[in-house]
Length: 224
Ligand SMILES: Nc1ncnc2c1ncn2[C@@H]1O[C@H](COP(=O)(O)OP(=O)(O)OP(=O)(O)O)[C@@H](O)[C@H]1O
Image 1 (tube, protein in one colour):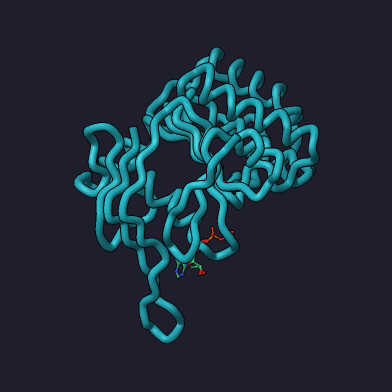
Image 2 (spheres, rainbow, N blue to C red):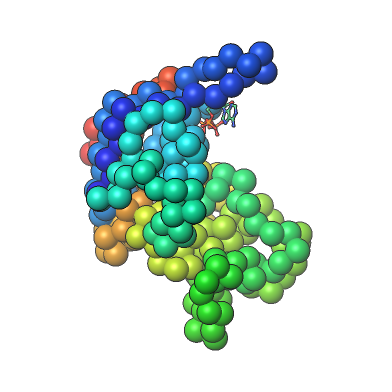
């Protein structure tokens, strides 16, 4: 269960004056529903996704996951909590150019987890599911293949929380549908917490909840 209370985030502009990006009085969400976050460019969607997993510091307010208040954790504890609970798909993928797709998907295994044959099997199976050649040079991949590599990496350790920033933005309808189906199934069948930023009409149509960010404030749109 996610509970966001009185969350405020601001940034500094080039003239060093601060501007508010998020001002969210209350937002709660449970695992098992597929949530899509929409909003115009610059409305704060990425900032919100990063704030709810503790990657973005808040000026005020609280983000609770169950009994854990992220704002009360030290940075090290917050990083460990995120590593143990969250699969993140970044908007710019954040892949390592020098590594193959397979090795990119195995990167989370570097942090305290043994790199066993079963992990390689799982990483290979995820890449196969999303139609990415496992051992090609990353620089030879299309943008869509890179995006699917980032998605596979986020799922590597079967996280309880999946946060995906525009995960179908570079995909055609067919490979986008594979990602959307997987996100829905992670929520509905595996009971995961799944939230994706998206403008993709197919993703919005598949959502159980559509929440909209406008000038830092959240509103909810009725679905189906
Ligand atoms: N580190 C930062 N420092 C200063 N301003 C920032 C920083 N990060 C984001 N911003 C600004 O905060 C606002 C919200 O950015 P954010 O990336 O969250 O928007 P978004 O809704 O995800 O946009 P998009 O759909 O274009 O990706 C924008 O005006 C952006 O320029």
